[in-house]
Image (tube, rainbow, N blue to C red; front, side, top):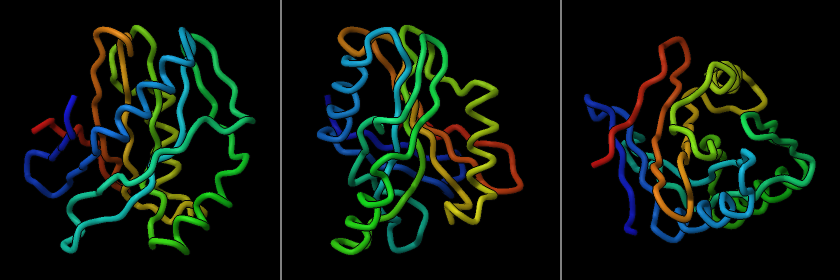
Length: 161
């Protein structure tokens, strides 16, 4: 496994995630078994604000609910964690991650609606939220896809470089 980097065709949007953070995600997916799971992505943007750098991934909030093909992320403990990361290193919410067990890492209609709501929400203050989806088997054959949901535009798949 290695660090992953994704970019839009026009290089307007990028995402970088270190091997260590990806490993954390896969461990949480393994623990979830055949249920979906997820959390949030935290980090910063590069100087030109074109590339998001993931510095932290949350675990699954304790008030989350899930099944084999659905996931409702809870919020328990997230605000305190976000406040700590902001105060310590000026890191902030960048988007969401979740797991599609034994399925492709493509966003469902529910995923798309949720990400569009986040893009327009004043509570999130994130007009271009990212969605990172792990699909397949986290112990064997898995894939990770990244998407950005710019406000007032269709979502864009970021391509692995």
